Image 1 (cartoon, rainbow, N blue to C red):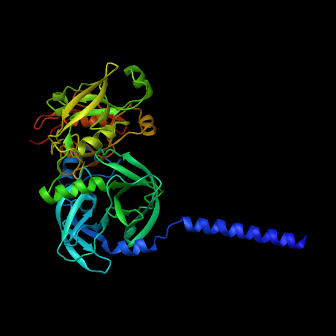
Image 2 (cartoon, helix red, strand yellow):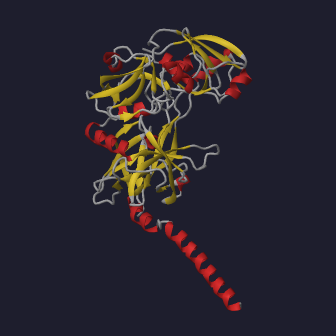
Image 3 (spheres, helix red, strand yellow):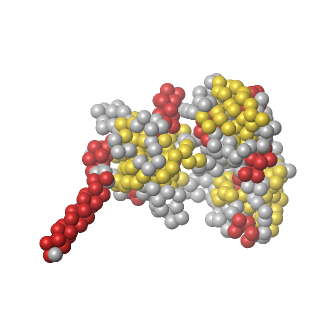
Length: 460
């Protein structure tokens, strides 16, 4: 009996050991990958000149009208602001890729390698729409990263990030790909990057750094995080290498990026809309508006059309359409499958070039939009507390801008521009895109519980 129990105990121990060994064996060893790829990862330090303009108030604070003119005439002394990010070397003669927001507005850019060598960097080109920037340092025979083949990444794969979170140089973190093709529209509504979502720990300072697969190839460029605290909560987003390759080639050749453009405003199709439009399920991109004299109008697209396939790719959500259109070279033709009046149709569209000054698609830079404003949607809680239905809340006002001249301040809630009601960000974007220069336009906003009318004028 004792012999049988001992034998049974040995069998159990063997099985437990086997399970543990299998579990350990299933996890990859990242040490070699990190050691081999880190030399091509860089830390980027920047200096930016700030101030030197008119003063603006913190959110929620106001200046009495009698003192407003005096306050706005006061200058703010210029000073240096320092920031940092990450990047990686893509060619041995000194080309470095990073995020646009890491170097945007910088007067000085320094690239630091893992061996502590430092180089001043020149900006070859920037692309705010994809949040990518190409730099060049004066050096030869540098270590370089390997770029992965586009569109080979799958959900569930292990990925590794290397960068300088909070200034902690060459920190590595690991996780898996959580989702692909995430749509994260900018404040201006543009949506040209199908982001990779992962649970890799990304923090401030990681921006512009590489995201590697287990082969040591760059599959993405770490760009954004979702956070309530300022640190990682397991939701990070990277720009796919397929987008980066196209952007780099254009920045090298032309110093700028030209994208395909249709000229439509689109929205998602929900269950109710699908039923009313005669669709068997909720999918596709619903055309809400067609820009006059655009490629979309010339091809015959109309408001109410639902685009379900474009250039051979399914359009499951509205965000899928700009991803496909933006990657196409202007002048190319594509087949679009759509539903109109409950019937399926096919049309040919010749893609145009996205206008560089397209106000509704341009990023909001440090100076804000065409009015000099950075605005945010009004959430339901704030809307209820203020007693308004819709609107956008002003986050910041740029110095020497139309908004500042009109007396707008952070915390004001814009509810009307011209004769148009502003219900949210999309309304605001559509109206501001059409405001003529040199013409006073009516604006109505809420400030400290009171509605105020003024005029706002964009300088010609």
